[in-house]
Length: 156
Figure 1 (spheres, one colour):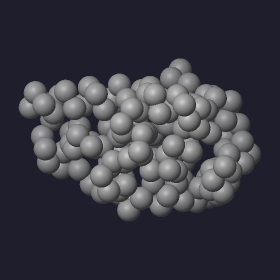
Figure 2 (spheres, rainbow, N blue to C red):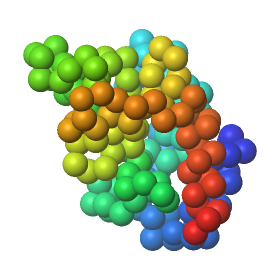
Figure 3 (tube, rainbow, N blue to C red):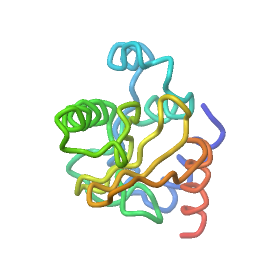
């Protein structure tokens, strides 16, 4: 397991045991490959390892996964459903190209339709805000996002 994911596991277990209990069992590599299809090879390794560690949090547990942002960790299935829905809205003109990219994969959500996404082309992390006219790049990689989550837990 990725060293940072081990740190995250320990920190959540220590500081947010209720969340730790709400995290779902990880997804096997076979399931990941099947569900992601041809996109599997474009997913950053750290995100694959995160979903292998834990497949998001129980949808009935709506408290934050991210210690400094109001966001929940999405299951792989929820992530895939969200990208399909968002890409359909984009194709129909309901989402602007200034605010959505069809190669983004959401992995965190705020419960109100905003998502933290990873670009399948660049590996950069973006925050999609459905009320904004444009989207902000937040991190250069999923690894730098994960480091910010770990630092947030250390500060609790």
